[in-house]
Amino acid sequence: MNPPTAITTTLDPPAVSAVDVSDQFADTLALGDHLRDAMWKAESAGLGSWDSRGGLVVAGMGGSAVGGILGRAALADQAGRPILSAKGYELPPWTTDDTTVLCASYSGNTEETLACFEAAGVIGARRVVVTSGGTLGQLAREEGVPVIPVAGGLQPRAAVGYMVVAVLEVAAACGAGPSLRTELDVAANALDALAREWGPAGREDGEAKTLARALHGTVPVITGMGLTTPVAYRWKCQINENAERPAFWSELPEVDHNEIVGWGGAASVGQLSAVLLEDCDAHPRLVRRAELTAELIADQAAGVHRVRSRGETAVERVLSLVLLGDLVSLYLAVLAGVNPEPVEVIERLKARLAEDG
Image 1 (spheres, rainbow, N blue to C red):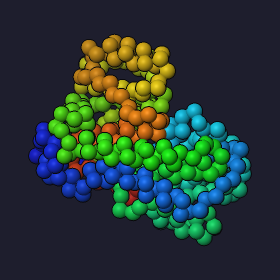
Image 2: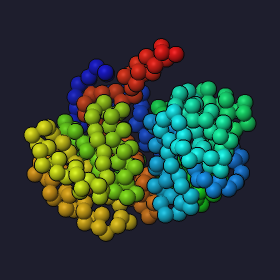
Image 3: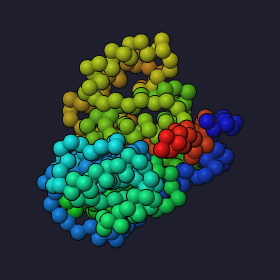
């Protein structure tokens, strides 16, 4: 665990720089640039086009895997084939030679992803790789598998823009969805503006800083609905890794069939904050459920925060919430005096696994 530094309530550039010594904020605020660079890198891979009637499987773990679920959300109702994630050592049992498998590993050394790469080859499935190098990149080139390169020098979780673009590009190439390049260009410009608004140089009462202060000292429970469900998972993971704090996620309407009852005893357990990620294009009944859920759990929650996506297209709205959540997690790290870069316990776990052979 990181040794804590002096805790601050100020979230201006000097306060951020004192804690964020590896400048994770810069990588996060560059999301728009990452999208543009990722589209160029994907084009340079020369994917071509083919027809995978079995759909697309995105095999990956952690920050490398999140592009699969976020890309699927960004496609919304434009997806024409199944796009599913495989998080583990095995592909879904229905994977056939008519399925495209995108193996995503930022480092190229993720053992679960390497196992899926091998399994896809045995099945005869069409394979594509997105990585910065490592064993996966080497194997792909040896076997003639297309590689979508990713910029180096990032924490895997900060490469989310590259992973989302890779998923969308492969989905378009294999017939699982249309090309969203125009939407990505528009989203990149919008994210530039949001980065200026929500970044450390922005106003102290901006949305990201205000929400981080409200969540500080509590356990956030992030709830998504429809398009925002995978974003809720992203928020949870970012708070875990960047701020070294517990956080949990769930989704509506399922919450209203079980978890809402558990909120009845929340205050007796600890300080739990509810964050509801809402979308302007959500089903009207989801909107009503969000309103009622927020009202009914308010007396037991440390705070209830309803957060809205921004933008016109699904791509823009998904990525606006991704950027907001990433920044909130980094501000939480600053407030706690925690350097957001290291993930030492994950490295210790990997080292122990390596000892097992």
